[in-house]
Image 1 (cartoon, rainbow, N blue to C red):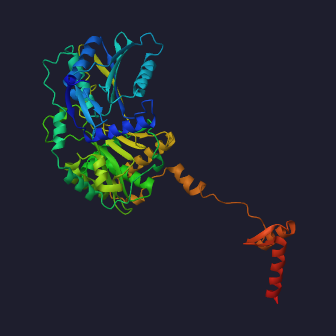
Image 2 (cartoon, one colour):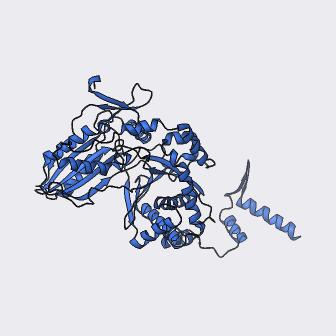
Image 3 (spheres, rainbow, N blue to C red):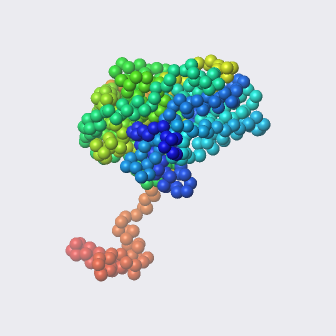
Length: 506
């Protein structure tokens, strides 16, 4: 890239630094293969109607032109810290595949999506996103948008899809669209924040935590593995009662779920003071138009949960909420800086996210030039052994992402079952002491109390002296006692015992 091709050089947002580190680490762990980058995200849209593929491709190209940060490359060699370099223009990575003649077009489309997720991005070679348009039939298509998470967060992805179809309606002409709010204004906002004050606030909030909170310490040093997903859905009544009860106690739904997760982590680690990560939106309310910006704003920050057995659910949740209100102005600080300030107590290996996004490209049901989005699927991942994602709705969905090299599917199902029981216990009685909640299901309880304690064995109908005499008679020359260089056989020990018995009897 020459100087004339360069539009801008920008710093990295806090979580971009984390993603960049993990990409380098994973590439070094598998040299020559590009590594296995778990931070490859994907959005898959099923489209019904007479699609104009050329117009959609033009819309994708206009997206890259309108948002410079989507053209970013990430450089670090020869630099004191990594930067994102913005070229003036990039080619739109676009591929079209006709699956109309396949025996099972949907299965073939799923295979293409998996293939795209398995292709790692080179962070120095922009753009770090690509489009694949699959033709499933004359009036049915599937658009696969794959990107590195370093470009976009969960809030931005539906914004991107919404803008893509607004541009599709005009054949890629953005003349009538408002100019997008630039991502670089957020990076400038970050640079103005008081990092020292934030570091002090996090150090105080995590003071006294006794070392890292690790549910899977054996994961240290292992290469990251793409996670698998287990899922449960709470019924409408339980979802409604949980939401109302959280509001009654002055906490958010997110805080209620963090409290339940913290209690589960405490159960898994045997501690009453634990820390885990939470994804926060990272969009400052005082930054104009931040809600419509496209980029990576989300940040991962520690959540501390202290829960003695006698504490009530309500008390635990209110403690979490109070702490988060105090730390809200400091959520911009990167996790590396927080851990540097707070020490080992800020280290954790589980994370939670509440996917409370304000836009859904499939929610309106409206068509754009006769084309409707009829299904939305997404894929995201983390390097953590366990990650909990909560998706609000009439039925609250809880998704547990787990690393298959550390947990089995049945382990994940059991953990989700325990989480559900914690939520049900809170809804039934928020004043109940957390130590009185039974987390194990009936089978687990039977295994712990009955199966594992079934130590009964056959006991011979004989006395100790009788058993010894039998052994002495059968193997008189076998060693019975060894003390340094002194060895007594069973015969010698039996004779000595008999002499002692004669003395005692006399």
